[in-house]
Amino acid sequence: QSEDDEDNAVFGPRQADLSLSKTVSSAVPNVGDVVSFMVTVSNAGPDDATNVSVEDVVPAGSSTISNISNGGILAGSTITWSGLTVTTATPVVVTFDATVDAPTGVAGEYTNVAEVTGSDQFDPDSTPDNDDGDQSEDDEDNASVTPVVADLRLAKTVSDATPNVGDVVSFTITVTNDGPGDATGVAVEDVVPGGYRAIGSISGGGTLAGSTITWSGLAIANGDSAILTFEATV
Image (cartoon, rainbow, N blue to C red; front, side):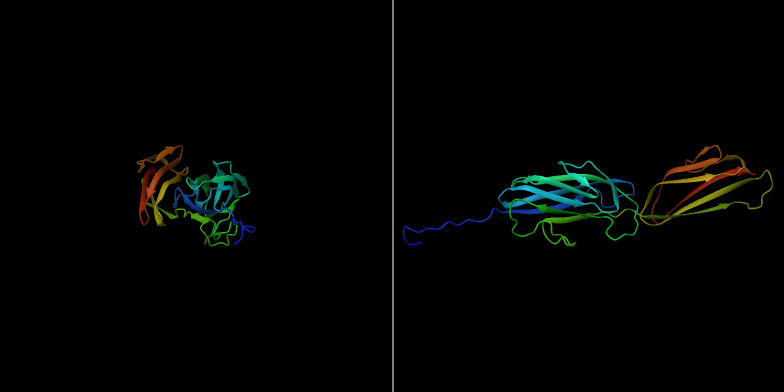
């Protein structure tokens, strides 16, 4: 274009370098706890990103998905946010809550994956909606929880297995936690049969209702035991 009757024009697509990170409010919750997931989408530019879509696949180990922010829509176990604008100055944060279910042994049942699935602008270092399971690009991430597991076992003994009628016998209940986690909120119930009366000397804050003794709110650390006792007349 060396003469005045020739010229050129150079153009290129608008670019928005989107990255996504995901966190969870508790990585080691109890089964039944409600945890909050937070997905943060940032834009390194050079242009603002428009019409951004984010998809979060909630795994089998979570249920009761609620409190979805920013107009996200739940379909089955997948949450989709669409029409987001992510400027170079301000990241967009989307959140939701889920209840932690009991483990079933299914692989990946607590691994929660989110990914940018679309944008009006070209992303120079990642491709939206192409997650192959390893979250290797910066527009995809996962957050996992590991529910606390406590293996409780109970043994019960009596001070005299061949008492006389009218004797007072002592019962001892030993609850042991084989771990690996600490156990909290443990409840134990003992239904005393009709062959006994005058139930008393109940240890550990246990309460008697009719012929049933209940201990509640116990905490048993990994490797420790709780010993509960009471007496009854034969």
